[in-house]
Image (tube, rainbow, N blue to C red; front, side):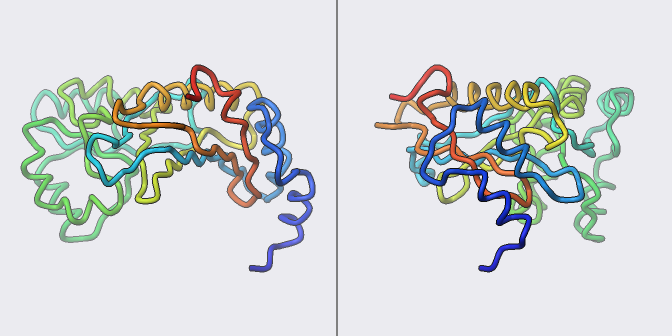
Length: 234
């Protein structure tokens, strides 16, 4: 695959075989973001688990202290007082059967996250085959199935992100924007990694963090020395 001139220039800044300390990696990935828009900085974390086994799943959510730099549109599926709570907390869309019908009938997806009360999950489950593949199905582990609607909406708006393994045992997650100061990106990255390390399944054997790479949207990957990431690497 032929890469553009900017990508090639950025790639020259990185020593391919080197594992960078987290602070160095953050500084470097900021330098590689050369697009005309504010690129997202993402972490790609390969774990030493097997996602085919239920007892080795890694999934959860964490509030990044400096947010993601992205405006997140929240849809709340709730009724009565809980719907009122959602509106007061700043949800972008609030509804119940009407919103479920809109998604199903109009293929409507003008939102990034769904939060639902437990009593609405039966009805949402009917469109699970539409929501599931897009990663939009609410989940108690991610805090998106809850009776505390107001807190859930506020946390998501403040920068709460969900992390989960894909089929290749890798977590892909944003940690901020290229315009963020390096120390803020580093703080977000450390918070994310702390949550993932804490979420290590007891069934996981051997090395847990196999590889950690930071990339800008259009830039090359910068490998992070996982031994320098706090609190682990047995």
